[in-house]
Length: 160
Image (cartoon, rainbow, N blue to C red):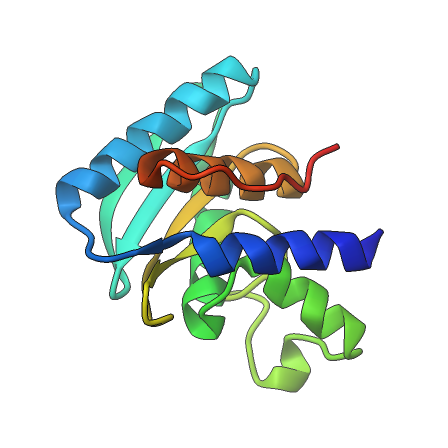
């Protein structure tokens, strides 16, 4: 099953790319995540960053400061690796490498899912879209689904 999940994550990252990005587009994506979370019965904190700066953040009722901390760590991972925090964690677990062995602090990074890099068509990561509040896989998929919706694309899901 891990191979199938890895293939789906890699496919998502191959297709969810932007020609250009704007603050208004990021705000729209953030609001769509909140809408999707409501539809799916979840409560999430959403953080969107460009070059490390928060350009959108909102918390739904039922979230806490803990979600903000998780979002920061997930976003750091996605922006550091230029891939989703979930794929980064999966690849490193396959290689038997811990965050510490990579020189990364558990205080600042995590291998949990929920942060998706904002990728340009060239493959350059310019930021991240991060969700915290549901299960790791659900956080990841809701971020990917919102990006796909904005881009008008259909993507495979890691949720079965």
